Image (tube, rainbow, N blue to C red):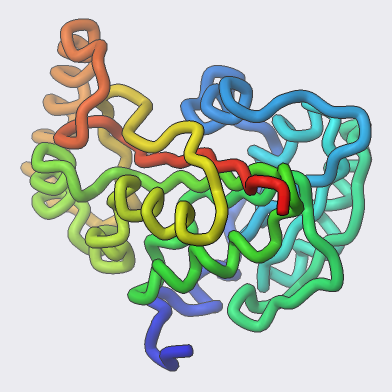
Length: 249
């Protein structure tokens, strides 16, 4: 394992968030719609999220009937997150407070998922394989990342979101490459490509007045042209994603 594979630090992810509370995203969040489209409901299945904290998408798997698991090095991943999911009425399994790079549970899962995780590593191919080994026979692997690599998205982030762009491996945002990796591991590819339509999300850099004004204008332009750009494109769609199923061995 490369010692310099991480583009972020533990401190980045565990820093206090003023006003934080566990909550779900809006029901029409692109990742949740993606989950509901491709992952079947269950009464007995298990699901683990890699990089699970703070876990809003786990609630969608809970809606589908899965027993929920998660691993993240945020200390509250083992306390606050499962406590919230239990209070929401979901079936809750084990939540590990651990570095994913060193994570080796003695079980496999019917669904393994991550959202915005693999792109924070230079060795993203190896991270995909770490997901794959956790998938049960006949189980599903679902991975999504933002699509900063697309020509329009890259320009927006390079111009207005450079600090956030720096902690994302743009070269990892290639679902066609993910598909080839997983085919070699005995997976059938159910979907790989782009989704979410055209919109621009950014980190929280300190921007000057002119850039803040330009972003205000761009966001309103995007709202209007999304009605025209109804199709998906590697150039402008907000997300990359893949859903694959391990073929029974």
